Length: 431
Ligand SMILES: [Zn+2]
Image 1: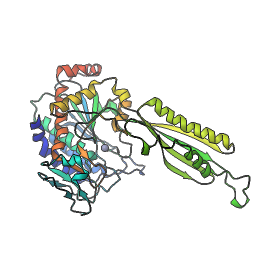
Image 2: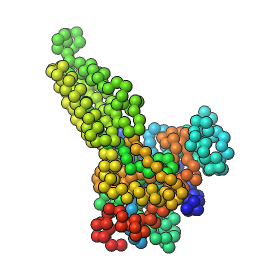
Image 3: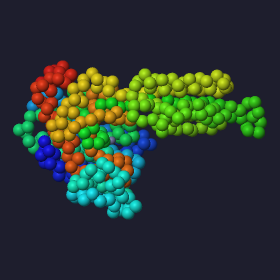
Image 4: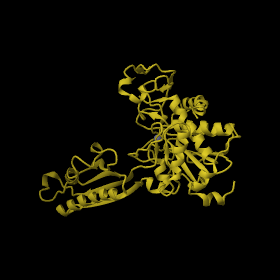
């Protein structure tokens, strides 16, 4: 189905170039939801375009989500999810995307900053794309392909299906979210109202990569209350919380179990914030592992270190709190492997060999899957996210859109429609 990708290509590109120009940077420190009001600017554009395409139930919600329905002929209702916000790591204001058509394989100098160069010898994935049309930034901002690529691909796919009513496909629910980059993407996502039997995020990942596994994650906070006394007269009295906290940090595993010493399937404990005075200090850690039992061991280790410290210095008050952040989606997706397999099959029908690699992080899909909406992730074909050196191949970008079209088609085929473990709900709501 290379033709399908070719048919979708210019539409997906045009949408992508339009969406990246709208600043939707989210804000870690904001208390509002969405964290920045400007995310609604893109939401409003998408709302209008979804109506123009002819989708139903189009709405921009009070929380900034955009939802819409494309009715289908048969099969389960499939959710397609992408996030509209971009990372704070680089500026997302005034993005000036540039398309290098039929790229000749030479280094690409970004026009806004001659020091910013996409070098072929440092970039084997780019080097393999001679002849492609390459989208880059001007060198002063991020591109925002994370995740406006996913947004444009979903829009291109539903526009294509809406324009071809003769194509049989499963019903589709579109869901564009906010604040994914600040970890609050699905805080107000109403799964019941969304009404999909299962869903897919289109977010990040190299061509062909289907993600059905993420870290399980928790945050551990250790609070140490010492005793502050005037330093001139504190002999035998002062209990310095900073020193106690440092002692604990010094006892973390050395040379292992940290982000800087692990990869692949290894988990870690990572102190990411240390605040304190003599009187009190707080250490914040994140713990990560693919295996829930091992994650619990990481948490246990921190509790043990805190207990040790409390035993050594009984005058200090030490407390530990553990907060679960997200869970490995595999734990939930195992209940219905068909969901990820359908994505594999759709990719194959587009001539792309699917592959897997566990994500050393979480996705909105991890949270949705834990809450009952199974949501693996489909590649978007982006590269060097969150950076001014971000680039994308227009040809690669069309492939995920084609994969989504094929996915909606195959889920309407009897053998796939009945294989997915959602028959009860599908049967309960005839369409
Ligand atoms: Zn993303």
